[in-house]
Length: 149
Image 1 (tube, helix red, strand yellow):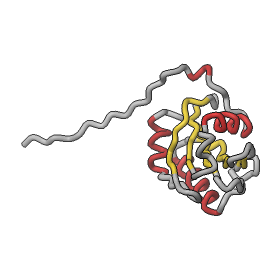
Image 2 (cartoon, rainbow, N blue to C red):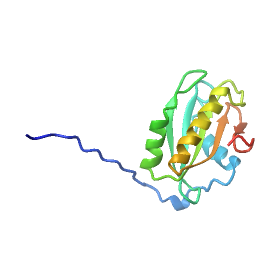
Image 3 (cartoon, one colour):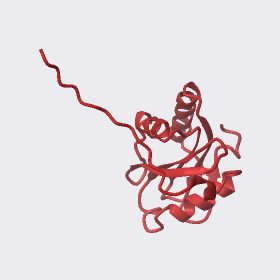
């Protein structure tokens, strides 16, 4: 009897040296990077969820666009989130999503999701450094700055 089984390959490819990437030392640093990388034409249109992937020195390894949602929500599958985190060998993450309404305070769903991600990260020895909420304007909300992490 011959059994055929699919081969799974997992890879992460560095196209630019991480040493030149910014180090995430505070919420403002993360906000600056995220604001530069977010599409200004859609930030006020619909929700999106992204994650900054960090090395042990808190330098950005990359950014992953996890999901794009509707006007009031974006679905986050934490299995996909952590597949990306583990695949990239990241040890720290900064979560980010936008509120098209401009209301920067987290919803109950935002807080529950953050806690769920934190619990999963702890099991995998991954640090959740922050969760930022951006609006169409320049402001942001930081879970870390508000003592919610």
